[in-house]
Length: 515
Image (cartoon, rainbow, N blue to C red; front, side, top):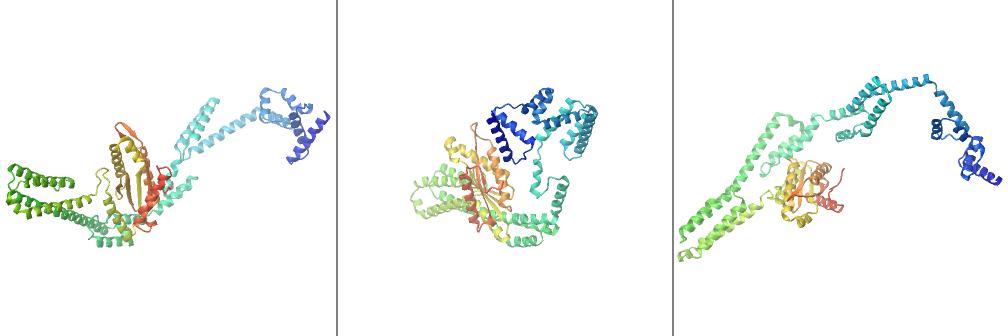
């Protein structure tokens, strides 16, 4: 037993040294009792606290365990504190003081610029004034706990787009907002509007307006505030009207040239009919087919089909012509050449069609023309633009699973979504297959990211339905900014590379990512 006590004493002293504590009676007694208890040795002096505690009230015993009272000094200190607090008069004063303090805090809360906090503070004050029971106070406490746990101030982050705003201090936040508003003066607004106006004035077909456009652009660049003057506004109106007239005249000339070609073929065919032995019935049918052609209303493909049908009918009938018809082989050859010439013209005209029949987005040819225009504006007026390549994820799997008709439905819907959410100044085209290209004038690649990510989210949540079955569709996007590339071609390639990188990283992404 003596050896055990010696070992306890030795271990206790070593613990004190490791803890860098002074070898005082209290410290020594504390560690000695801990080591003894650990070794299962009962020491009478170490059980004094336990004996004293058993003589106290059960609630007091629980407090002793709660506050981990382990020495006689700690026990005396605890009991003295209990005795001092037993003064009923002082306790009432403390409670009343705490109630008044709570009211002052609540009154201060009603002054804060938060509707929910103000309403809850007023409700709490009313309860404290008319009902100060335990149940009422617990109800108030729970209400405030619910308010704290559910409070969400994310709406303040909507201010971040306007610049740095300190949101920790309401007064300073208002001052920051006023500074930002004061910076957005009229001159700054005109500086932002001027490039957009210049870009919108670019001719769509005719190039004869370039000199006029250069003159207006020069004025706006040097003096953006002139946008607010009546003179420049009238000049812009006149320019737009003149541009529309020239564009209409250009379209009219192209249609007139094709109409003239049709008239010549029509005359040749009637002359051929008059000099042939074709039956009256066939003559009537061919004349009707010719009269049914309406170049201004029929599509290029329909006009071509009708002409091919007429040519086929003529070819069938000419096999039975007499010797007189053989003498007019030169006329037939001329007619044949004219038909071929018209077919070639129709093929060229078809290539000039600007709208894709399925998605109603621009065709690839129209895209190339639009890219050429924005590149000319960039070279001449430094009007920047961004590109967004958008591709449907796993589109082949959709076609293989549901069929090409389902794929066409999805393409048509995506074309409709893109046309709906782009700005009027933007340009959407079908680049090929399930790939679209969006031209975004006068915005940088970071702004293009927020637009593209919005489109990505809309498509992801869109309900694509085919034969009462929903098909989950996602898209990947690649972006580039013209001013960060050496050429228009490099800008297209950069957006394409970002698109493939987005697919490699798991699809349903927009790269580069600015979120």
